[in-house]
Every structure is written in C-alpha cells, then in structure tokens.
Amino acid sequence: MGDKPVILVTRKLPQAVEARLQRDYQPILNPSDKLYSDDELVELSLDADAIMPCHTEKFSAELISRLPKNIKAIANFSVGYDHVDVAAAKAKGIIVTNTPDVLSDATAEIAILLMLGAARRASEGERIVRARKWKDWSPAFMVGRQVSKKRFGIIGMGRVGQVVADRARGFGMEIHYYNRKRLSADLEKGAIYHETVEGLLPNADVLSVHCPATPETTGLLNVERINLLPDGAIVVNTARGGVINDDALVAALKSGKVYAAGLDVFNGEPENIHPEYIGLENVFLLPHIGSATEETRDAMGFRALDNLDAIFSGTEPGDRVA
Ligand code: DGY
Image 1 (cartoon, rainbow, N blue to C red):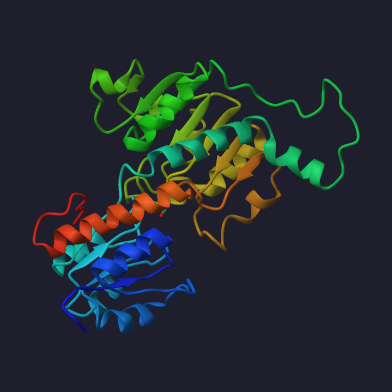
Image 2: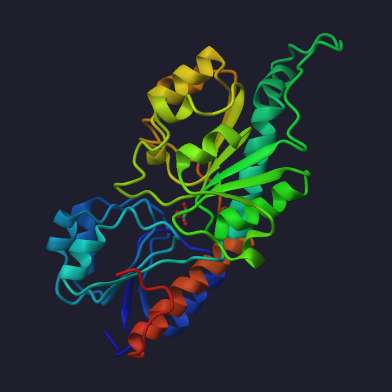
C-alpha cells in the first residue's frame, strides 16, 4: 500500500464521494453494497486506518474491542451516531465524527411529508387508487385533518427541529418546543418554549420528534406521555425508532387518541418493525429516507471526508463526537 490512508467504506456511496475518496485516500469500497457482518468488518479493518460507516453498521463495545489498533477513526456517514458505542471508541482512542447540518433540509422535507401524509390519509388514498377501489366521490369521502394554523410541537429543537419549525410556520402553525436548553430569541423566532416534554405535549396537535436516540430518550413517547397529547393528535418521527414505545403508539392509533402517525424510522428496522403498523390504515410509513436526496447524500459524504481530512492532517475534525 502507498502512503495515503486506507479507508474502509462500508456501503456504496455517491459517485462524487467515491471519486474524492479515490483521489485522496486508498478506499476499500463496497460496490455491491452488501451489509457486512461484524467478522467481515474486523477482517476488512486489518489493513485500514479509518472506517467510514453508515448507521447500518452497529459498532458495539464488543465489535470495537475487536477492531485492530491501526483504526484511528470512525467517520460516520450520518448525523445520528447511536449505532456507535462512543464510550468504547473513546476508551480505545478511536475518534468518532458525524455529519450534522447537511441533512437538515432533506429531513425537514420528509417530516412535513409525513405530517401531511398522516393528516390527509395519503397512504390510504394511494392504496385505494392503486387497487382500483376508487369508485365514487362524495363530501364524506377520505376526509382527513387540516394542519394549517394548528399547534406544531417539536421534541428536540436542534438543527433539524429548527428547519422543520420554519417549514411548519409556512402553514401558519404555532410552534411549541421542548429542548434541553432554551434557544436564543433569534433562533426561537417566536416559538413557545416548554421546560419539560410533559409541558409541551398538551400543546402539540402535531408532534414531531427530532431528538437523538440516547438511553434517556429510549421509549420517551410512552403511554403516559401519549395520554398528555390532545385527543386526535398526529405523531411524526424522523429521528430514531427507539424514541417511541411502539406498543403505546399502536394502542393510541387504534383507540383514536392519536389520529394518525407518520413514521420514517422504526425500532427493529428494516425487517422487524412492529407488525401492527403494517395493518393500520392511519399510519403513513416510509423506509428511513429522511436524508435520501442526491444533494444531501453528496453533502454527507463530503462532510465525512472533511472530518477524515482533518484527522489525517493532524487537526481537530469539525464534527467530533468522541
Ligand atoms: C442519519 O444521518 O442519522 C440518518 O438517519 C441516516 O443514517
């Protein structure tokens, strides 16, 4: 091998990102885009200086303990890094980075799509048309909920939450939010701050989740908290499935406590999501595509590469999380 650092790239990345990898590094690419097992990741790491993974590779403490000493960094192609045991990485001296900011617009688009899809019964309507079951029109047909001028509640007013708030303002919605820290007035833009999730929930006709998955947020939206929502609220999740207690949400969707949900992320995704979501008419389901636009996927790759460039030039990467 030459003197350019060797980067293990776990998934197929956009062409422009792979071209920059090839120009500046010696990448071990994955043209078939297969999902590697832990054993394969360890094996492929033997010759690598860093790994550029996605959230699809779970870097547990056990896997990290098996990585060879030559691995200096895990430069994630994702803003979320709940798939990496950062404490284990830190203990082993492995730098961990993520890709914030660049996916906020794309994820906000999907949050709004989910809100509208859930409120206006888009999934149900689409199925009726495709199955050629659309036989009539009447004022009573496919009536949904209007979101304009309603209250939009946000858990987690970070980068994505703030962009989603801006988009929801376009519908004349009143923005309420819970965040660990209150935003400054210029970022708040008139949004109403709640010091607790419990304080926010009764004010959320639409609730959109934008907090990271951490031990503290696991199962955050449980039976007790769902009961604090206004009757007939809409729940949107583009963050991580773990933030929602699925049994609680399914029960609320069945009882009508929650009118509808729009979900892009799931516990057990992709193959083991809660089976009852599949049969419920009032759920609008997408397969974790919040950041799936050409612009954003390029930008994520470039941001991960900026972090690697800093690491291998001996400077501090901009997006270090461990
Ligand atoms: C992210 O960047 O965290 C997205 O969920 C894709 O992994």
